[in-house]
Amino acid sequence: MSTALTLTQAAERLAPVFAEETGTSTALVSSPKGKWLSLDDAATVLSERVAGKAPAERKAKKAEVTVREAARQIEQPFADLSELRQARVSAMGREAQSHAALLDFIDRALPMFNGMDDMEVVKNPDFQAVYGYALGLRQPYEQAAKEAVDAWNAECAAEVEAFEALRPDWSAGDMERVVSMVEGFGGTRDELKHLWDTPTPLNLSSPVCLKIAQRATGISGADAIPQALASVGFSDTEVEAVISGAAPVLLRDHRIQELVARATDAHTPAENREAA
Image (cartoon, rainbow, N blue to C red; front, side, top):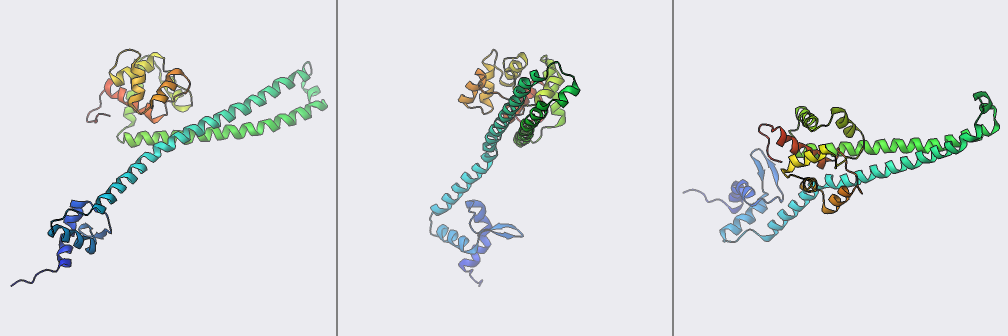
C-alpha cells in the first residue's frame, strides 16, 4: 500500500501548475524548473480547489494592480516626452530673448562710433564701457544657447528611443526608403536632413507633407493631414493647434516618425513587416 501524500507535499508537486493557471505572483521563488508558488500559497490554492471554491478574490486584485502598474511604466516614457518638448521650447525662448537683447544693445551702441577708424574706437573712453556691457549680455546668451542645444539633444534622444520601441526592426535601409519616397514626392535629401538635425517646424501645408499623410492614411484631399495626425496619437486639441499653426510640429517627434514610417511602408512595402 502506497503512502498518502500530505497536503503540503501535494502542494509542492502541483505548485508549478497552479502558478501557471492562476497567474498568482505572490511569494514566487526560483526553481531549476521555473517559477514556483510558495508552499503556503500552493496549499491554499489546493485546499480551495479540493473544496470546490474559486480562486480567492485577493489573487485577482493583485493581478489587476500589477497590470495597472505595468501600464503606467509603459506610458511613462511618453509622458516624459511632453516635458522634454516643453523644456526645449522654453530653452529656445530664453535663447531668442537673450540674443535679441544683445543685438538690440549693439544696434543702439554702434552709432556712437560712426565715422571713427578702429584705432579711434579703441581709444574712445566710451568704448570700454560699451564693450564691457556687451560682454555682460553675451555671457547669458551663450549660456542660454548651450541650454537650448542640450534641451534639443535630450528631446531628440527620447523621441528616437520612443520610435525605436514601437519599431524595433526599423533599419538604415528603411531610412533610405524614406529618402526615396520624399524625393519621389518632390523633396530633397538636404531638406529632410535639415528638418531632422534642427528644430525647424514642418510646413504641413507643403505638397510633400500632404502626400505623406495621404499615403499613410489612404485618404485623398486635405482631410488626410488631420486624420494622419490623429492616427498616430495627436489629441484633438493638438491637431487643432498644429493645423492652425499655433503649435509647431517637428520631424523628430516620434509620432511624426511613425507617420512617415507608415507612409513609407505603403509606398514601398517591406517584406515581413507587421501593419503599424
